Image (cartoon, rainbow, N blue to C red; front, side, top):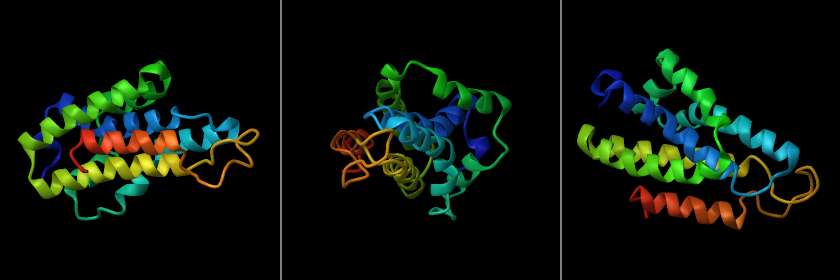
Length: 163
């Protein structure tokens, strides 16, 4: 299994930021109202650690959500939300593509598969954080996941080879 020391600083930052990029892409896909947008933003920030509990034996995921991340990585965490939301989707797809190449080179299939599923579960958690539609994010439709979010998650799943 992998640890922080199996990766360069740039690779580690990519591993750390990919679920944030994917979560941000999901959060910016549809309008969720003020409250819904706040819920989704909070879930982007807390989702990786929360979903990591589903993978207690994956050393890579557990190391990524531990507080030992480099100061530069923590600074980049805040920058994720400040960037132009129009490029959120492009950043997410680029990160997923690069992650697949990285994991193929650096880890085994089990760890890589769990990492990819973890990223997609973060996306799903963000999508479910707020119902779409309604007024101020209240009274949205029946489904917590909009059709646009569902389509984006399926595209990201294909990008990571998890169809």
